[in-house]
Length: 150
Image (cartoon, rainbow, N blue to C red):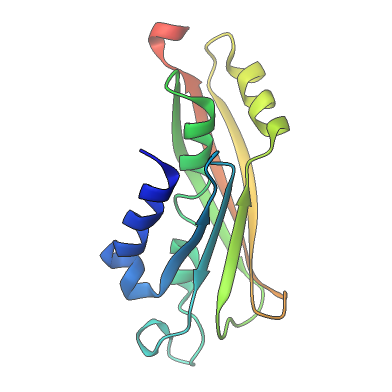
């Protein structure tokens, strides 16, 4: 599947649509993703700010999928763990940007070359329109060569 097709699927996916989550960029080489969430009456919490679950949801698949696509079919890639720290109330449109660096891919390839599993944490900040951090998210990614490639 092409990144542009996956972007379209995400932008039509009911959980994202209902949450106001919109993938604005998915680069052709899978290395960059930008996700926005607009404030809507149905995605506000009790005190009128972004619902924390939606803040987390907007980051959910966007480390695992690009890393899996960049590494190729020889690797098993899964989300293993995650954590979120709420820094300040989120209002208006917020966004997160994911950038898969060559150094991270090289580290993963080297660590899994012998067939071992490898766990790595990837951070991303969710920021508001003024560039201020609303939440910090970390995702732990599990990577291992497929059995046929070990």
